[in-house]
Amino acid sequence: MNGRGDYCKALSIRVNSATLGQIEENYGKYRMKSIIIVVCFVFAVFSAVVTAAGITEKGPAEITLDGGSKGTVDFPHQKHQNTLGDCKICHDIFPQKLGVIEALKEEGKLEKKQVMNNCRKCHRNLVKEGKKAGPTSCTKCHSK
Ligand code: HEC
Ligand code: HEC
Ligand code: HEC
Image (cartoon, rainbow, N blue to C red; front, side):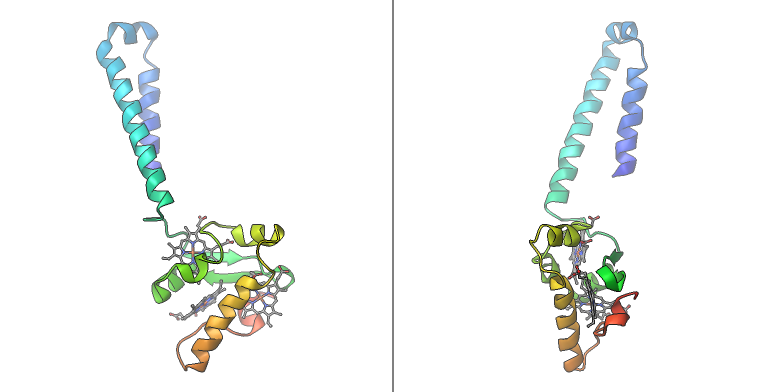
């Protein structure tokens, strides 16, 4: 993505650096610039659509969450994606955006510990069923 964007930028800078006179004289170059602009625009729209549809964006493999007075919580995001398969288990509660849990808590749209209780409930149920689970005790999740 970035690589492609930089490429577009580099190309347009190169075309821009031609003098106006040259561009006027050289219609080919002007057309070239138009083509680059169109290609970059189409590419930008395409990436926006892909991102909006959540087709390729899986987010970071590891996320550090804010755990308030109990310190941070290390959350292995990718491991959960692979083990659980279903994004909705978590992202029905909050959208796919870093920092969104704390933002929604501040706006009063999420209860404090609401997400945490979802984490713990699942881990607890799995422990009860004798399955492989994540931590259920405070200090196994929280740094303090
Ligand atoms: C077990 C819970 C859980 C599951 C399942 C889960 N996520 Fe997430 N995801 C999170 C948390 C927590 C965050 C970070 C929220 C925050 O920082 O407030 C997050 C953040 C994200 C982000 C934001 C990245 C960014 O840079 O802003 C994306 C994208 C994302 N998840 C995609 C997915 C996709 C796709 C799936 C399914 C394949 C998935 N997640 C499954 C918990 C989960
Ligand atoms: C499975 C991991 C996990 C376990 C176990 C866990 N927490 Fe949390 N805790 C979190 C996460 C994630 C958050 C941030 C999201 C939220 O507030 O729902 C959090 C948030 C918190 C907060 C901050 C709430 C706020 O916004 O003020 C406190 C305090 C807290 N936990 C205390 C505890 C205590 C006490 C225990 C043990 C009884 C515990 N946690 C067990 C993951 C966990
Ligand atoms: C729907 C069930 C479910 C939810 C929700 C869930 N987890 Fe887990 N978690 C698991 C399972 C299953 C494992 C064991 C994965 C494995 O070892 O392959 C696990 C493992 C973990 C581990 C240990 C990973 C390791 O490498 O040993 C941590 C830490 C963890 N979860 C934190 C969280 C936090 C924090 C949340 C909430 C933001 C959360 N989990 C939400 C099912 C869940």
